[in-house]
Image 1 (tube, helix red, strand yellow):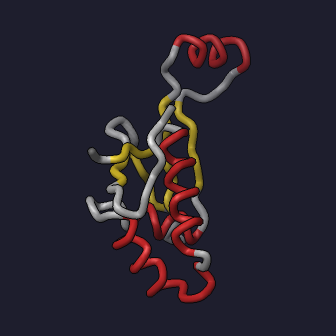
Image 2 (cartoon, one colour):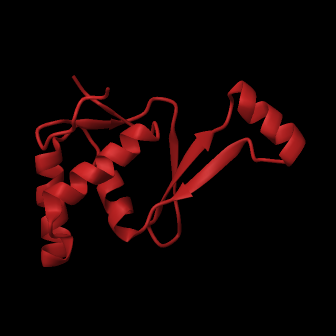
Length: 110
């Protein structure tokens, strides 16, 4: 069972990910599909070797804040940028980082 993420945790991008930035400032996470089942799906079903995950405005801003800061500090920046539209802030951030971690896009620093 994975550790529950808390506001004191420090998220870091996964080591094997690359990020592109779109013309409107949106983050696009590049995920290389290189496992055995990925190779089979690429050959049989024409799946791409690299998947592009497009983040919305809020997700892109949060992604840009992943710089070794804690979730609390990232939350302060999100609150400053989006104001009350970000509420309920910390439950949403924790859910967001839990999803990113479970998809393998971020690691939580120990």
